[in-house]
Length: 402
Image (tube, rainbow, N blue to C red; front, top):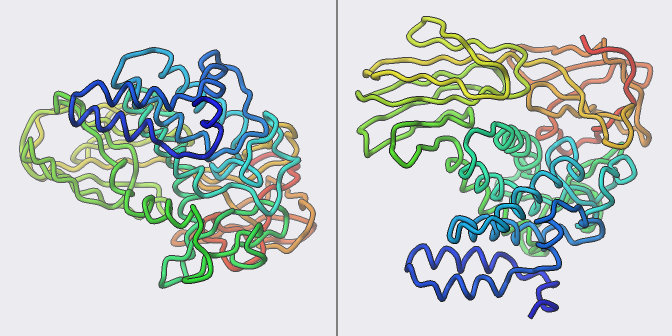
């Protein structure tokens, strides 16, 4: 059985654990455990990174299953596997836009600069990493890092893998990170070509159907006692909290703007916890126009009160420029603005040298930017929107941020 588990079989243990949740019959947990791939799980339980050379999306569903099995059994090894896998992938195998893998496989730990190729960041991997993130945050809802990663991957890789000009919902298999890369051109293998209606049927088309129907499932959470509401993502939306007869309307143009507004309808006592992202340069939170003490970036703002209809919470998180260096080469980096990765509109085939002090936002109503790169002014835009054009995402950087 263990030798068979080296193949790509998906999240069977996850499904079987879910059946146990529904039925209470432990035979489903026994069957789920048959799908525990020990060659993968044992090193991860010991916090050992042995991922190099492994097919990435074969293994992420196994880690999601481990998180589910932990919730079902309380066995600490399952949690160790899931949590260590997440930390290892995020810290040692993830590109700036949140995706991972090259030609579908993990490469040596921290080897980023050597694998900026046409076939980076398989879409399925990011979809499943978001599922794993969701599971782990529910176990440890104090850890803001989980949803900092979720936000970064959603806004950059997941949304960027959807062809915004397609009325049929075309998606890309890879998102290329080589200099002069493009999505939407090139051969089916590599170069991030878009799916077609009838001549392609990739795994990434299946996961893209799922991921774009799930945008609402990670904005808000409540605790088991319904005494705390978490606001983890900044998305225009309406929450109907039926058990408390509360409706919350979130209004925002984030990330074009840095502010979101939450309006309460209904009455009741509860704590609202708003994620303060680690990228926030400063934070201002007001309740009915009165400022409250804002916590430091990378934590939750906690507002406990008896809420009344018409109460309004406004949260502003100041964005600024940053860099996301390649782990193995600090002089090679992606440019960030808040949670966004910025791509330069360029057909350069080697990484241009970008002068950090020249970075500026060129519009208050659109996510457009410019900088001096390669000896001339280069326009930049958010990675997700840079479609049907040639782009550079990793630059040789010089100077200091503005």
